[in-house]
Length: 369
Image (tube, rainbow, N blue to C red; front, side, top):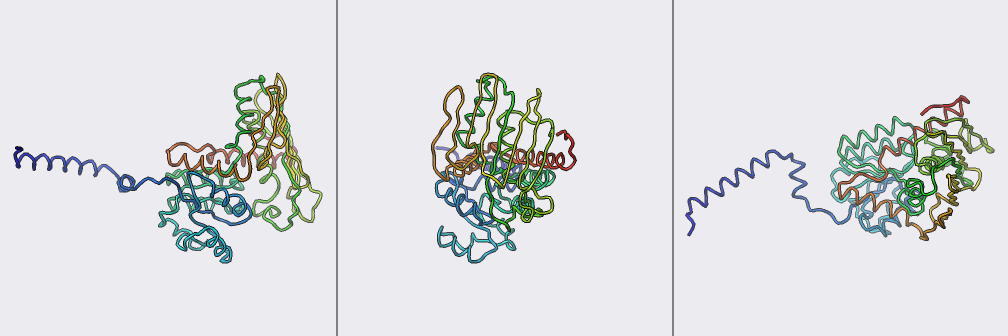
């Protein structure tokens, strides 16, 4: 039979050892060690416009790794509608005045900022300071410096930041990127892409310069992404650019309804891009040494289609497949402690190019990036 004195001594030594270990851990580490891991992350949508209402909320009914846990809105009527439709408890409904108190809500793991671009910086930083991971819709912000501020805030608070680039997560984009990366058709020689639609609204943030309006910030990001992803390279210069409008009564004070630009990539590869709120256009042609990859459309919500000498590129799916895949991938990255597929730096790169294209259009000069 074990001596009682030795048993007690052993337990005292063990307790002291455990106590020493605990002293080395921060309060956050101790809390994390005792907190039960979640099967799904709770997402709060900030801003309940069309994209949240028609695409993100339905997608969150299909996701496996995250769910709609809360909302932030300045419109009480919307709050009531969403509360009833999605069974959202009162404690998970916020407005823009009490938003910061979301820090005290363990139901909310991720804040998804779906506001006009001019508001992205403020709410991403506030969400990060509240200890929440952040998804942010594109365009990431109005300036590259704002993007950097958002990245810095999330890094400081040890929170993940993902930009809502749905196409990075969908199979058509992955396939043409694979063909380019593996040089299955040889090196890329040139690229031509366009993304646009007829925007008939006249008083939306897209028609307000101070809110981040203009086609280049919105649809133009898809064209810029097409050039970057389709070549598999980063541009070294904006060779030329021009902006225009056929409806100056709507696109005022130099706001662009249509923008065209030529981007130069390493090795002298040129990409011409066009983006417009004046016409329906959506295609990408990637000319390689051994043939052409043709995608049309290449950036829609569904119905994407493509071809190359290697065969067709077509993966049928229905709305809101892209948004569900995007949020599931991002939630899984958080849960597994892995880097985001589309981190804040990706959004920063595009806004830096948006600014350079506008500079080239304004000055008529080549702009190095």
